[in-house]
Amino acid sequence: MGVANKAEVERQLGVLMSRLDGNEANVRSAIPTRKVLRCHVADLGADWYSVVENGHVSQPSEAPPNGRADITLRVGSDDLVDLVEGRISFLSAFTSGKVKVDASIVDLLRLRSLL
Image (cartoon, rainbow, N blue to C red; front, side, top):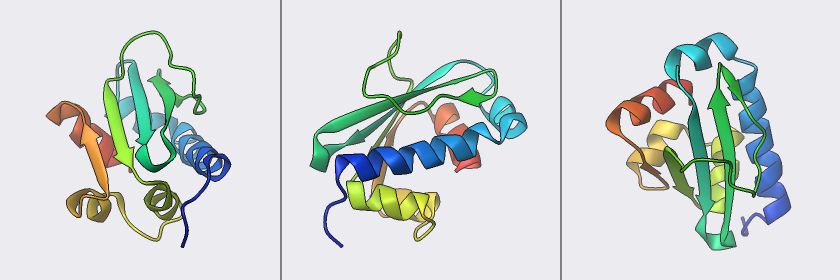
């Protein structure tokens, strides 16, 4: 597979955030306070941001929201697509280094419970 383009990555991130947003009770339980998520896709030189607040997850935006990112996912474009489409699990992508997470250990464990 070639490198997924920006439009495809943004579409896939939208699918992922919608999936999380549709799971309000679990999101509220896993991430009880406001968190800013940043997804850094190095091969595209792009970042997308979503805000988790009150059990809801905003659609991804290239414009950073107020506040610093609490959780940063670093992932290649093709790996992101594979992750969202279910070809790889978050745990296997994380342990193999395909996804890197910059977050506190508590936030990492909370995020893992959702993905």
